[in-house]
Amino acid sequence: MENFWRAFWKLPPVKGAKWQRGFTLVELLVVIGIIVALAGVTVPLVTKFTGSGKTGAMAAERETVQTAMAAMMAEQDITTVTAVINPAAATNTWTALPAGTGAAVLFGGAGAQFLKKGTTSYYYCWTASGEVYSRDAAPEAADDAGACRTPP
Image (cartoon, one colour):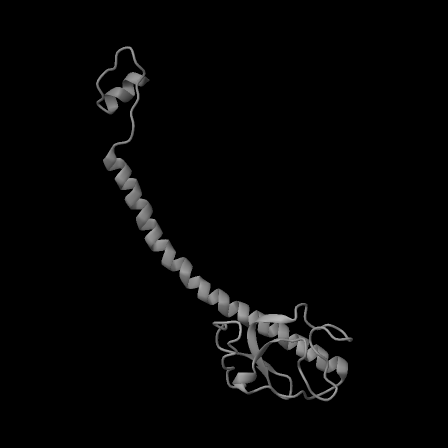
């Protein structure tokens, strides 16, 4: 069988040594070129999904905060909380919020805990009726509250 492959690849016969053949430089360059081309196609496709992942994470977290706000309002039997619609007052810390007559904090405190963590990744505002809405993007710095969107 070895003689067949030698004839197929037009290799000179080797006497007294086993047949060994490595890759040529051209073959290696072709393989590297194919890998670079595949990487050039896949990297932009993968990076565009990171933006949609952040948007999805913000929407999911907003829904969690909204559910916690609704549960707190139902348990405390209140219909309004102190609205936070000023962009400078947007928050991601829930150990003292929301405020208002009869309102309980969403995290900590003596009553039920409505959120599992006292700090969220994104900043939020809310209306007096308890509707939570998020800022447009993640904060650039830990103290950057940014602007909340216009209430829906």
